[in-house]
Length: 310
Image 1 (tube, rainbow, N blue to C red):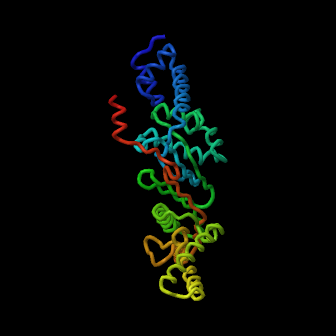
Image 2: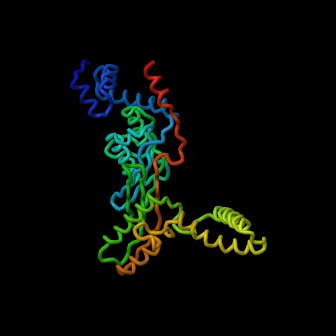
Image 3: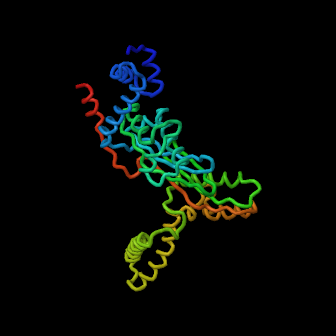
């Protein structure tokens, strides 16, 4: 079956794949558009398998709210240029929407879920994106909050995605509480809290920090010529204060509020609720930073250029 340049153009618009690949697909499928799309999908699967071992530490961390359901996702690619690609951004948003609608239990369930607006699964759509973008692409993680009031914040075009979940009750106007939630979300992006409250800090982590601070305080006392017995008593008092400082660094509600560092985030929430005559509570938060914890491959730029010109 013959095909024309218009057929190539139409297939490209349907799939997002480059013109040359669309032409090859039509040639391999005797001009049959449906078969050509299947051919491209199979090519996408092969490309995805071939690229799967390549390190993907760039991409987008994204958060949004869909019909009251808060979602945060991280989708990785190999280069930071991809984060500016409209098709990749749409894929990330589609993944987030699938999380909201399908409520997957884990990544396997998410990959098996239907990608919004298509008859394909999220995994199949990811495979097609590998073909379109030409890089290893991987949905890494997600979080979903279906209860309470979720507020999403995306920092620096997708470097960080934050989802903060609040309980808001008894307020005639919820706008001030939601505005506070946005401020808290930006605080989470900037200050990197690891826990919501000090009660969540694991006992082993706390004990390790106590030991470190006690050792430091004892060394400071020895440098001042304080005898051992008195030194330990003084050090114990120092440690108590330093543990509070430790909590201020890693626990959201203990952190000084970025807009008024004389008050903690917890105190600001409490005072805002009292002022508005209702209840506001921070239930949980999620902070995804793209590539966090992934060891990036270090490339020598000069060597890379040399490879290209050989």
